[in-house]
Image (tube, rainbow, N blue to C red; front, side, top):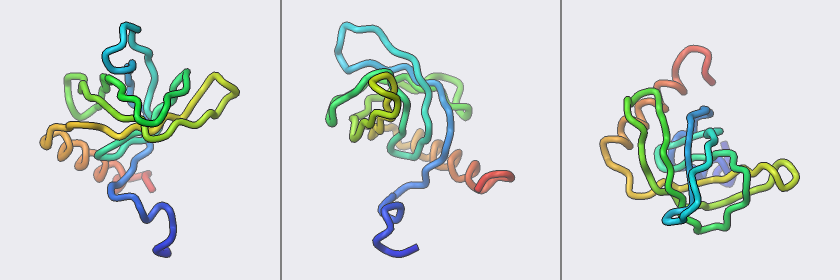
Length: 121
């Protein structure tokens, strides 16, 4: 690929994957909403949300990955949010914050195995 290709800017491998996520604005009194990821990498993810979030908003999230028994509780900062269905559905991109190094290694290994595995591109 050429050096000016936008995908070349990515520092981490990104994998399409649907993992269950509950989320809410950090420290808000509102309850959690339920969604799923569209894709994930070592330091971020994209999920579908039922509302628009401003860039910089911090979300409290609980994510379930198949390689670990318990839910992962993590904060994430919204880096982009785009409407995909007329005021009802948004693609929300989130940078994960303050991740445990061991979890990052496990997630990285999981993504690499999935990307190299049979039937994956």
